Image (cartoon, rainbow, N blue to C red):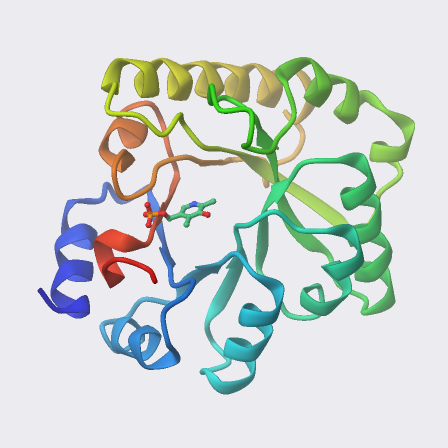
Length: 221
Ligand SMILES: *Cc1c(COP(=O)(O)O)cnc(C)c1O
């Protein structure tokens, strides 16, 4: 099926409070334009170089989301134009984004990434580490960062019950954190969970942002 038909099918079934990040990593600019022409404006990329190259050649009203693991020393390349950084997984990275954001007089929207999957390889804070972070003086001193919520990835498994449990645990943590630390901050409202294989499960658990790649653009090489 074509990109535009796949995209329209997904958009038609999303609740109005859930936004779609079309994950275009490894797919060419022409594919992004096909989705753009249907009205899609939020695209997700996971490699700094690839994101910068696409930003250069594609329409400037695209909202680019960085969804990958960002190395601190590369933050400077995307901070000037990125709309949302999903995967902030260390204080070091947060401080560097803040520093670079100051330089270009921007406030950067970020999500804190929580490790909820069973795989050791996935990045992110534990719940305890996240609580320590948001209570730390260094965190509170960041002026050019806007914490917009949390992001997570479920285990890569056919076990739907496991994925549901992982999403549910993150959603509960999100609600607690919102009440305990961000009740005065309206911007803390996004729960970025759900990919091609599990986004309906994630939406049922409270996702506000789904990151869907292969279901729209096909398999990646
Ligand atoms: C690649 C990627 C996605 C999209 O995965 P699909 O299974 O193709 O939908 C979502 N989130 C992150 C963090 C990714 O790296």
